[in-house]
Each structure stands twice: as C-alpha cells, then as structure tokens.
Amino acid sequence: MNFSKNKFCYILICVVFAANTLLMAEDEPIRINFYAKTRTNALLRSAVLPGWGQVFNGQRRKGYIIGAMELTTVLGSVYLFSQASTKYDEYADTGLKNSTLYDDYQTQYNTAVMATGVAVVIWLYSMADAYFSGSSADMDYEEEIRDWKVYMYARKDLKVLYQYKF
Image (cartoon, rainbow, N blue to C red; front, side, top):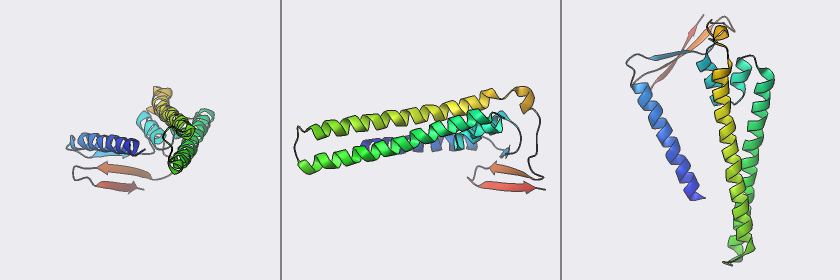
C-alpha cells in the first residue's frame, strides 16, 4: 500500500509543478471571472465537484447523475480500501505465508483500485463534458449571478489575489 501512496504523491507533485510552470509562463496575471458563462468556468467547476459544470451549463439532471455516480464510486473506493486493509491485517496476524487470507486481501485491493479508476474516469468525463457540452452561443455572454463579481489573479510570486467588484 505504501507504494501506491508514494505513486499518488509523485503524481500530485508533478501536477502541481506543471500548473506552477504554466502560471509562471505568463508575465501578466491570469484573470478569471467566476461568474462569466464560459466553458473554462464550467470545466473548473467540474474539476472541483463533478457534475457542477453540467449544472452551471443548465443540464441539471445530467449534473446530478454525474455527481451521484462520482460520490458513489469514491465512497465505494474508500470502503473497499478499508476492507482490503482489514483483510491484510487479518493475514498479517496469522503469520502464514500461503494463506487464503492473502488471496482475499489481494482480491479486495484489486477491486478497490478498479473502483478508484472508475471514479477518475467519471471525474475526467465530467470535466470534458462540462467543457464541450455548453453551446458556444450560450457561453459568449457574461451573466452576473449577483450584483458583484469575483476575480482571481495568479502571479509569478505564487500569490493568489481575490478582487470583488461591486
């Protein structure tokens, strides 16, 4: 199990490094208006919470279904990893090398890994669908949900600034 945690940490570090490199490539700050009806905002919302981008695009039913599927697979993965850990502890307590408990652990662990893979696929699908499902005609205008806007600036010095305009 430690190998998979190390692998996850390595991938996370690579993603953060890549994002940091992209942010530092720009001399000007990146400005994001979270209330503009854009494909990027739909994608970002689905990256944070799968299904939120679809709801943002006006596809509520699809968004709720995607969100429920993601929640189910994530909770299932957590449960299956917990069960795999319990099975491994049972195997380790017996001290037998060729025990069926190890086979039970291995089966449970492989199932948990597959469930995690399904959760990742649903998450990626949610982002892609949120980005491509909004029609460009509907996304070209800026709609203010409230009477103020939130802007985020990312700078080279790794500061994130929020600006409110009333």
